Length: 75
Image 1: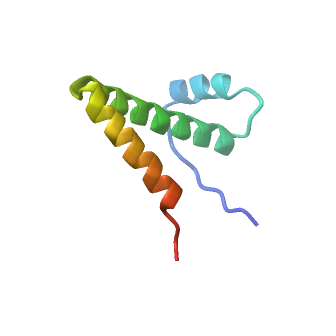
Image 2: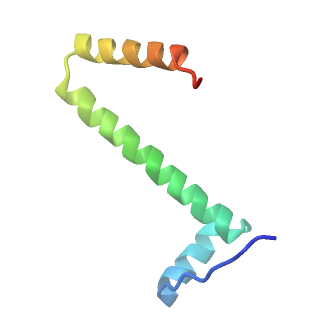
């Protein structure tokens, strides 16, 4: 059985969120907002890093990251 909690928000915020969520459940909608914000924050951080690095440095970081992901495994 799922447990639910109440989150208090101003009435105007609730109206805006209700319109934006459409037919989705509240939990699903809020989780999607969180995931979208988290992804956007990561993309912005990457773009800021990209602007400070040379193309060679960026290529090295990307290839190291890809190799790490390929080779990493939990034991």
